[in-house]
Length: 120
Image 1 (cartoon, rainbow, N blue to C red):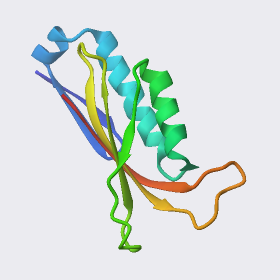
Image 2 (tube, rainbow, N blue to C red):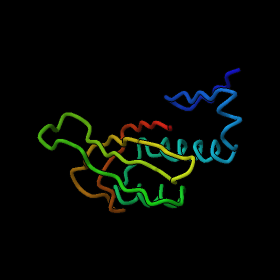
Image 3 (cartoon, rainbow, N blue to C red):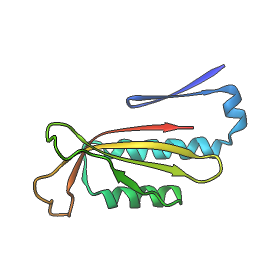
Image 4 (cartoon, one colour):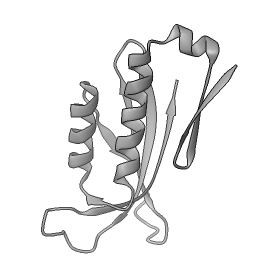
């Protein structure tokens, strides 16, 4: 028996055995993280603001690393990070963004174009 949870641009497939092994709370937390990441797309923000939002949501420190190559302006830049509560929740994620030429009135300096994530 397969249960599919469709999330914009992602498909999270959970088998019956996985549902029995993981408490519903973990599945709910994953869905909250997915929703928080999805909400970033199309928004102007800062790296620090994203880290803060995910840290508050998960209760574990989230630190992202900028692995972008500055020599090519025509491609999106990339932040990588992970969420690991040391128990049942582990998520690798990427945040793709464009750098803004000038800081916004709210201090934002990036425009998020895409996110990707993988739960283990």
